[in-house]
Length: 368
Image (cartoon, rainbow, N blue to C red; front, side, top):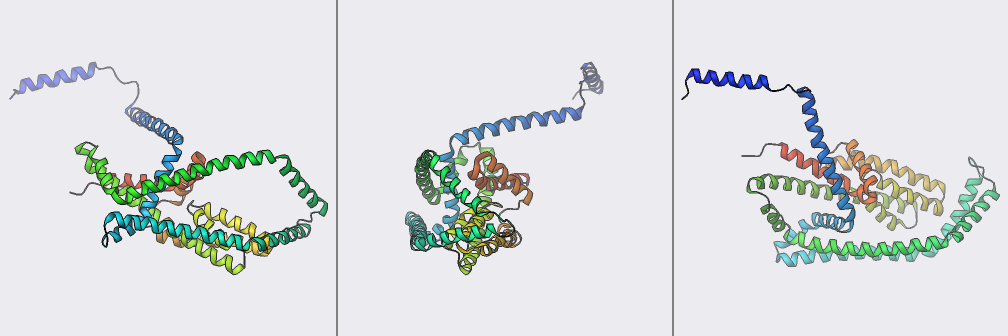
């Protein structure tokens, strides 16, 4: 054990070294801010690189996302069937049942459109005349010659841009092929996720260092719990909105009520903006087929259903899955739409919800 004289000499030497060290030109507060700044800069560069990579791999990324959505919806049914039959058979029954249900809905939509096509054409022809008379009256007071000129201008535009329209249709046909390929890839991945997703996750955990596996397991459980809860919750909200819209359209006698109801279901998957856009399309159909009064009633549904969704469905259904402030929801959807269009608007909120759930889980001390 060193003597007191030796300890005092060591302390004096340390003080002399500290006094000889040159003073920092900036204060400790500025140093702390600079440390956070360069760390945030590195994170921003890493995020930018990730976005560039994902932008070049849109098809597989979207396919995996859709596969995770399918897994979150069908996994509980497959788990229940596993109690009655082997796991492989339970997964096949669940997936085939979902495909048959989807095919049935699409066939019913096609049959509805085909059955109403003739009457729909007559309704639209009469609806255009009603719209013209409405525009000629108050408060627009448009002259008939202007409306006739609008018809001729529209016909001239279509005839002069026919080649552009045809090339656009051809390009969209190629897009359809990409969609079919992505759907097949999503179905392929979802079958394996439903069947052996737990085993795949355990394999991924083993790739991390041993001292990080417990933290990784907590983060992964929080991420999947939040994603699955959000997916099931948004499906319930979309189905509720679609049922309300479908009942209203049937009562009002708007044609194509079933296709518009299905459109409302899928549009509601885009928070805040999806449902109003679908109802606006329904209002246009109602305007052409039934006149301005019915169209105004359909437009009023945007406000009514928005209030029901915002004050009843989302708080009740989504509170147990994710708790995100409405401002964060709006900013997430807007940023996702700017970065990646409709796909980004759909994906943004679940990604933000998962990220926030993981952060909250990791900030909570691990249970002993």
